[in-house]
Length: 273
Image 1 (tube, rainbow, N blue to C red):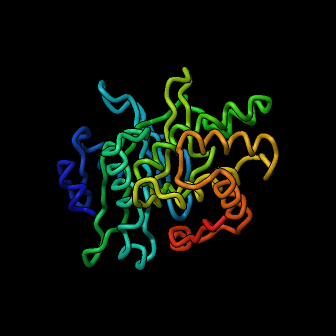
Image 2 (tube, helix red, strand yellow; image 1 turned 90 degrees about the vertical axis):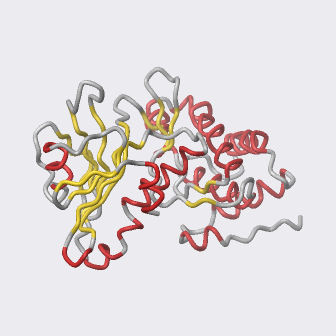
């Protein structure tokens, strides 16, 4: 995975910080920022999210060419996490890179960084991503205009059709992770850490993502809005099963409890009719 990142990005190092990027220069300010994930209080930085597992920072006034960008960082405080660093920031950057190869609608990923720790471990890592300031999630739009719920949720359908045709299981497909620009000209899908890449046009992948998306809406199973949204997705994707089987499988999966990534990928569908 790291080899793939190195293949696509130039590597820079300053002390314990390594940056793979073709657009950002690892100068003194960026080095300080990437080293400060455990206490992100630098000037010119907005802390958008901070927890024990991750932090999301907006870097302001970076350069004349790039006014701002986002650091999605993972301060790996546990020794076990440091040994398994690939599943955190490296997975996020790698999946963005793969998604870009499919020309999927995603924020631009400027690169990947690591902070080295003791005994060859990775103390922190993360991805550097396009700032989507001014964008709104589809969920925010629904909350603001509930009478436009269905047209808003329909904005997800072209993206889900692209994922289906490319063979991408985003894992966390929801209105919270789809963001639209203020002018309505662009909708992008964020949060790629747990994404997986599967066979193209895999029906179970589409079923799961449809069910996952519907869980995060207030469209109740079998309602006219639920059926209308799902039918529009079905027609956009043209999966290789009949509508009744598709909608029945989505309803079944939607009613299930949240499953692990492994369970999601090994999902068995009822295709017998």
